Amino acid sequence: MKAVRFYAPGDIRYEEVEITPPKAGEIVVKIKAALTCGTDVKTFRRGHPVLIKKVPSGFGHEFSGIVDRLGEGVTDFKVGDRVVAANSAPCGECFFCKKEEYNLCENLDLLNGAYAEYITVPARIVSKNMLKLPDDLSFERAAFCEPLANVVHGAARTEIKAGQSVGIIGIGPIGLMFARVAKLKGARVIVAGRNPVKLKLAEEFAHADEIIDLVKYPNPEKIFKDFSDEKKGLDVAIECVGLPEIWERLVSCVRPGGTVHFFGGCKSGSTVSLDTTKMHYGDIKLMSVFHHTPKYFREALDLIASGNIEVEKLITDKLGLPDVEYAMNQHIEGKAIKFLITP
Image (cartoon, rainbow, N blue to C red):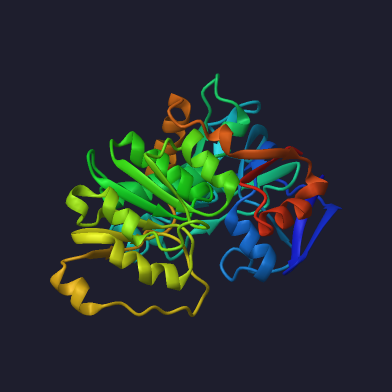
């Protein structure tokens, strides 16, 4: 098959490789749609100690497709089934899994290799985190299940409620999906970003109530407060950039008793300084949510299938496998939201 593989930061190669035959419990999926992701861009630029443990490695992790062949013992799927699979599955047996904190599993089974014609899905993901698609759901929309699952998990843990004021800084695909999910929960949503394409999608896709162009208003804290009840500050503020300086500023955007959600992952080794007096006497809740779980992956599929989130609006363009490096560079230059890769 043809595939794009990761060799080193800045070095990905479109080449011909052998399809990995399925072992017991595994499934080979013929990929019909794959999506680019901010995590893939970070990996392309600097590698990834968790996702890339050896090189060359498969690359890409958001996909959907058709069951092409089955490993021994697979009974829940058949050849020809239309499916979507997550990029991980918990073990169910470690310290964290026993506490039902499946996203923190110490033995998380991870999957890369979506930028290819075929992908061999490990048995644990097949059994815990692979789902059949509704007949009327397209492959390209289904491929959004993995990124949306992260957002659904984050929104649930943040306990966003109807009537709350929710502010989001960073309106890449994750921030835009957070805004849309918050709107569906009945919140009043204000977003802040600087990319014109993303600002337009904040209106057309997320249906945000207020949109701040950070080029014109580089200090959004006052606008966030003006938008909130009695101008006391947001009920919830969510960081979707992954920059320590934004983490620090976000605390000043929420009201006493408010919640700050640091969703954007910062570069390893980053640190922040926070006003302890404001945090303590303001009774501010600080939190971060990592990854997703099988529960939220299922909820993401149901949400996409419902039609309430028009994820296809986030697709910048459709490209082939030879164009993945071009796609990565377009992301780096800020010219894309997500590319649909069709092998």
